[in-house]
Image (tube, rainbow, N blue to C red; front, side):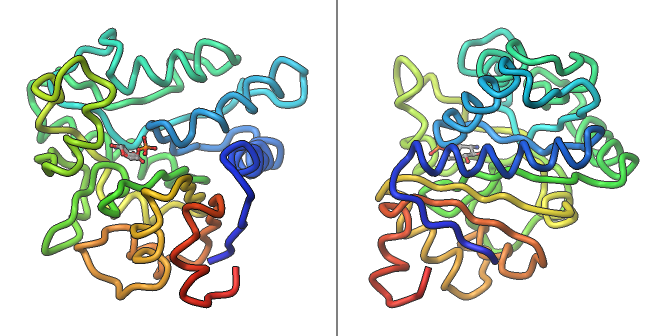
Length: 248
Ligand code: GLP
């Protein structure tokens, strides 16, 4: 794992955006695996700026998102489809038909999940997968548990994730209790992974991901087994790793 230690959120965002822009420049028809949450917002802003300056184009890019709340319609302002439209897709030249985010209203969840995996497989897997990390170490919405689930699936969100995401909703009761998430299989099949983290509340998850045992109770720890992971984090997120004396 290559680790970029950045001084703050903005530096982390810029560095992450350079990795994504580099992928697009080298492979204009790449399949990008995209993430939501507050962490990637800054990186998406840089990408939109660079697109507007004519430095990059998403014309040939395909995208597939990690996850979506089950039960939220795509137009709901807390759906991940809405997030992607407003933070990236509406501002760049990506073709709408080339973007995929799980549909939160899907009725036949099993068929939908199998189809999502089949699409990723048919594209030859994701070229660059962007990942944030949950406070409990989740990647996508793969929550801590006794195993790593390979396929895309429906997950019950943990109380800690519901608490963490309640800030985006009017009340905690409004937070959906389930979500669709890409499984660990397609994430680990990505050719390259870009893991980003910011803030002290992620320090424990970052430490367990990088320094802990490979253990499904911290789903991020599986990334230790991937041959090409770039982690970009600010000093606050790396604080526990730094305190442990690990050179980053
Ligand atoms: C969310 C998403 C993840 C995201 C993580 C961290 O619930 N499902 O994909 O990486 O939790 O979110 P944030 O960046 O807002 O801290």
